[in-house]
Amino acid sequence: MFDVSEILKDIAKRPFITVGFTALLLLIPLAVTSTNAMVRRLGAKRWLLLHRLVYLIAPLGVLHFWWMVKRDVTQPAVYAAILAALLGYRVIARLNQAGARTRRSEPLSKSTAATMPSMAARTLAASAVLNKDSDT
Image 1 (cartoon, helix red, strand yellow):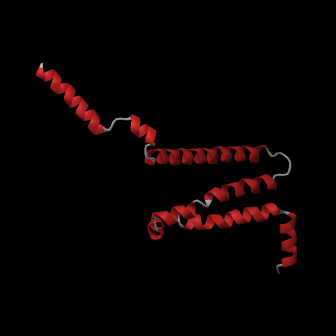
Image 2 (tube, rainbow, N blue to C red):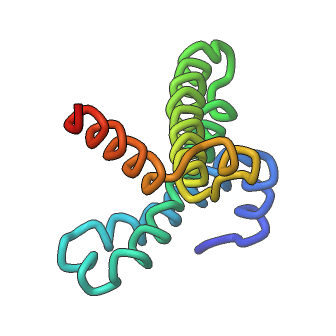
Image 3 (tube, helix red, strand yellow):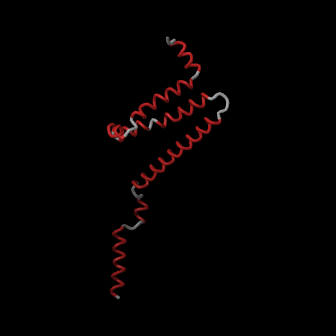
């Protein structure tokens, strides 16, 4: 019924089938776990980790399409450009988010701390000025 050697020859001859089938298999867990009940069941962290597979699967889909097309690769190139723009945006947004988090958590350098008066010192100076004005 199935000739395994012929199937293997066909797969070797057409690697786009392997890439496409791999992408399809990787999409199955994402489809199965896309309900709210599965998010609760897996927990948000594990669900998010699993669904980050899409960053691997999407380029496989584009590669499958590119290899499948024989002559005019315009349409796969458009999809590749759109995917590159979307993934590039995600990388830049993540880097900006990480940079903002790092900037907020960094302690002041010694030179900055030495030149910047503390809140208490500013408060005392302001109250001294106010008291001086009220005495006159």
